[in-house]
Length: 442
Image (cartoon, rainbow, N blue to C red):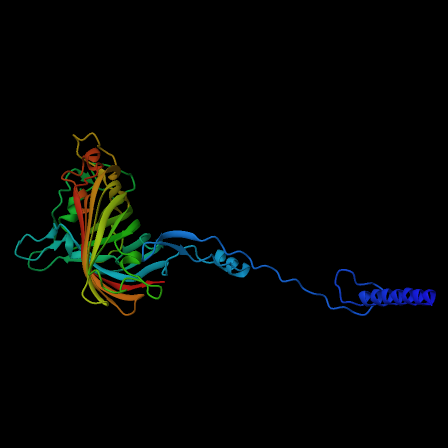
């Protein structure tokens, strides 16, 4: 009985061990599941600890005296970063460009002199300004770019005047006969039609034609080209305006009412002028006859230099403002001159026997460089149709001293060729008149 009982206990323990091992093999355990024929097990996912928060950056003192911290930095997606890098680096709002297109309506203020007259002084004479430049319309264009955040900028300016040829005539009349001229033509002769060239004993003096003419005619040509490159500084961004991301140009609000801008830059002015004073002792038709004479004077002024200036705007409302500008500078003036007396058979000659230029043709050239002074002033008003589009108008005066004018080159004695080749540059060019146009910022 003891033996049987001992054997029963032994086998019972063995069965229990075998049953327990099988149960352990089918227990869902991720780390020791068998790879063959075992029932599928459910993997247990261990929870991950949360990422530590970004270190706070303390930027100041809070309301109650404690430190305040900035928010954690925002992670920038790759596409957002790419878009930002391809965008405009300027953190300010548009506009970037500005410009205007308009016109100037200028007239020239000039010195006058009498060229033709009758013996009877009471009869009207022909004056130099009778063929003067009328009020002339010319283009006025500006173009520029704002720099930085609109506090500065660069500007290009052009305006020009090129009127058509102007004419004036004086004819002989039955009351006082032929017309006479005021220049002194003594000492100058003209070769006749014989073709033998200069012969002081045969060639008639030029004065025979000019002082006994059936007709005098004056032709004048005139042109001005003005170029500027200016660097600008504004008291308000974007040309005294543009304070928000949705506005541009000058009329963005009108506070402050006064706004200023300053400039410094380079300026070039090309001023050309010539006249042709002709006489005909035979008739009133220009037909290249032997009794026709022509006196030509052509001068050129090329001024280049630096200027400074500024502009003040006053805004009555957001749309309506007035302005005043001033610019001035010292310029170098490179001048050239050509004058001649000629007719159908060639140039006139010096016939004064005591002149060192005896027998030389009257066809002379001269050049000179000197200093000129330029002053430019204007006043006007602007109306802003939108914050980007405006119209403007005003009055402007441009004065240039130390220039060579054509009528100043007429000599007192024509036979003194060396003296006459020296340019007289004490003239003053004054242009004044209205201007108007349209401005735009974009």
